[in-house]
Image (cartoon, rainbow, N blue to C red; front, side):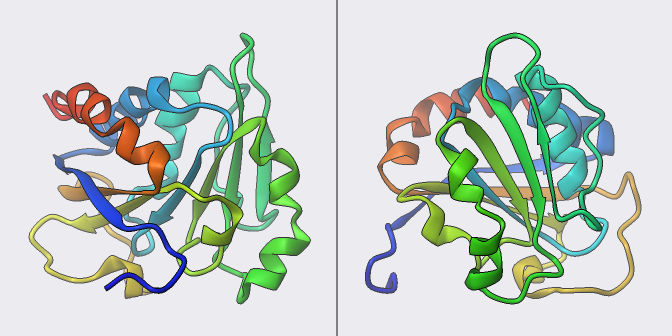
Length: 187
């Protein structure tokens, strides 16, 4: 059962990603489906490949880079180089409440940007009526990476499983397009 007020989740894709290079490729394949106003919430343990995926999204969106982890600055804005939406890349690891997220004023940029939040589960969903949850786990781990907040960093080319779950009307409307675009993500 979904908590009151939250959109029903819809699993859009589950993809095996064997290497960091393929994780970037997945981000590049996802990027053309993204538009200003989209919120993406990334979940996964340290070293899972969250920033690597965002690097691919940044490449695909054609934003000014390099895209690096915003761990110590919390948020970075990467302007579009060719007229598309900017990329707002947030690392919420050090944030402990939605009130701290609110202090970042992410909603001020949300409608003009693609906003990607690492470690954002439980903190940023109130920013939009629709969002894409992306969970990255070591392939075959069976663990719930959304609950893992530390531990050993994963190896760079350890196989991963990426689960994309859409919430809200926006992701229900593009579900088939997303599945088609990502069908060759690891090929």
